Image 1 (tube, rainbow, N blue to C red):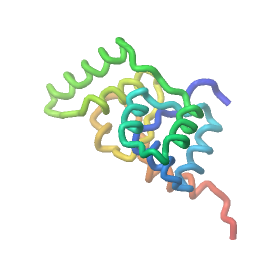
Image 2: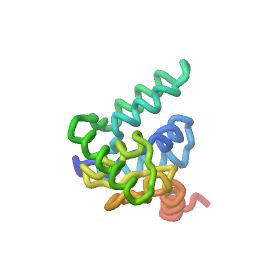
Image 3: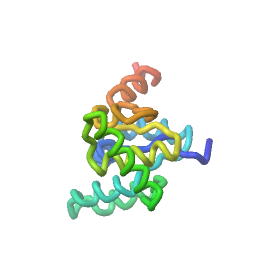
Image 4: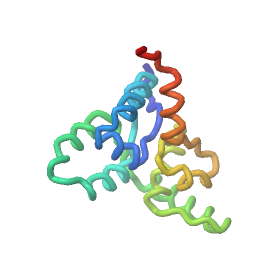
Length: 145
C-alpha cells in the first residue's frame, strides 16, 4: 500500500460515510487499500459546522482515520488564483470548493465527490463522482448469491 493518499474526499462523501451508508463505507475500505484517504481541513470545518451532539464521537473517529491536509498560505494562494481564473471564464466556484480543489491539485490526486458539477470546471483536476465509483465498486465485488 502506498503512503501517498489515493484520493481526497469531499464533504458530501464524508457525510455519506458518517450517515452509515454501507456501500460508501465499503467503497472507502476498498480505496484505502490503494493508499490512505485524505480530506482537506476545509472539509473538516464543513462537517463539524453541521455535526450533531450524537455524531461527535463518530466524527472524531472518522477524521482520526484519514489524513487531514492543513490549509496553509500556499493553498490559500492556489485557491484564490483558481477562483480568479474561473471567474475570468464566467464560472463561479465557492471558496470552500476552490480550497478543496486546490488541495487535490497540490497533492496530484483525484477528488471523490457527491457534487461533480462543483469541481468539473477546475482545470487539471481529476473528479470522481461518488455514484459512478459506487457502480464500479459494486460491479467489481463478487456476488454473494
